[in-house]
Length: 296
Image 1: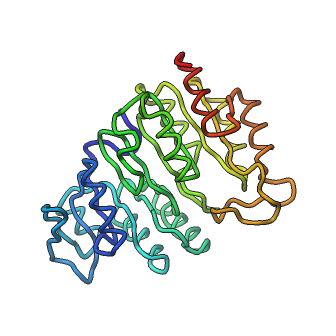
Image 2: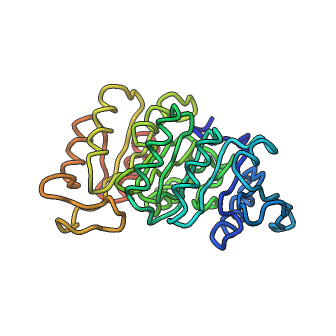
């Protein structure tokens, strides 16, 4: 199985006709993703040739869903218009909205997450500022390179960091992944570590969970508490940012240490207290995974 995204998922791409949207639409199609349309009100009615495949463009998400049965939207809309795009997808009742866009103002992210909750939470939002998610061999929604780990496997991965997602997938490509989810590193995100931990715990094809965190906030501490209380499968972790200076944003908007809050050391301690084996480097983390699975 896979979590959130399967081979049956039917995907719309909001912003498909832009440069980034088109580039990654090609990559998603090559990975086997069932892309059924793009959304751009200024280019509605056209059929765009994407590597010899005709992809229709719709004026709205609702129109695209009605015509194609789409249940996933991937958002490549520029930051000033991203809030409206996510709210449009939620208003249409899309099941999953994957917000790739980086640089969305925090107040816009707060607003569209609140909008989704006010509608009853029927739409799962992943992101913003995330690489998306991939269920190898089935579907890819976002910018994760599908050729890193092309075959499905036994590991579930949840990560704040896109590049660390790619690295751990590469390190463990011979074992493979049920799904890998990049939740994004902004201060306010939709789907959390805990959401993914719960889904992987319930997934019969996931034998082990890899959790990647980084400095800033308390998401990893909350995830550790959830692991201790609810997760029976083995969890292996990695936390980035042990050498980050206090008060300076490192990469992601949410990756900032303020006083004693959000440090990598505190996060590692919380995870280890919950029984999570935490690697000092990505390579060591991969070695820990192999050891737990009896392959080390």
